Amino acid sequence: IQMVFQDPLSSLNPAHTVEQTLTRPLMRYFGLTRAAARDRAVDMLADLELGPAFLDRWPRQLSGGQQQRIAIARALIAEPDVLICDEVTSALDVTIQAQVLALLGRLQAARGIAVLFISHDLAVVAEVSDQILVLERGQVRDHGPRDQVLKAPGHPYTQRLLAAYRGAERRDAPSVATAEPLAAL
Image (spheres, rainbow, N blue to C red):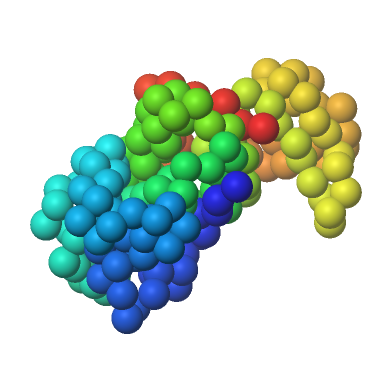
C-alpha cells in the first residue's frame, strides 16, 4: 500500500532531488544498484509523462501538477497493490486536475492496482469511482456502486451532499471530465 497526499510539496523532501526521491527506495528496499535504480526512475517518469531532465530538479522547481506527478511516481515506484489518493487533485487547476485523473486511470489499468480515492469533490468522485463510500464524522452513511449512491442515496447526509453539489453545479461550478473512470475501492 502506498499513499499520495493532498499537498505534494509538503510531502516531498525539499533536500532531495527527484532522482534521490525515486531511487533511494529502489536501492534500499529492492537492492538495485544506483544505475539500475536511475534507469527505473527514468522509466517511471516516462510513465508519468515527464522526461529524464526532471531527475535533476528539486521539488520547489516544479509546478503543482509536476510535483503531484512526482509524488505519484514515488508511490508507484514501490509497486503497490493499493494506491491511496488523498485529495490529490484539490490543489490543481481544472485542466491539470483532469490530466492527473486521466493519468491515474491509465496507470491503474496498466498496473492492475486498486485505487482508494478520498475526495470532497463530488464531480471528481462521480468521474473516478466504481464504488462510493460516504462518511460523516467517521461514520459510514452510504455505500455502494457509484450510480446507486449518486442517483438514489439512502442516507439524508448523502442526499444533502448531492443537493448542495447539484446546486453548485447549476451555478456553473467547474466539473472534471476524464477519459476513463478509475476503479476505486
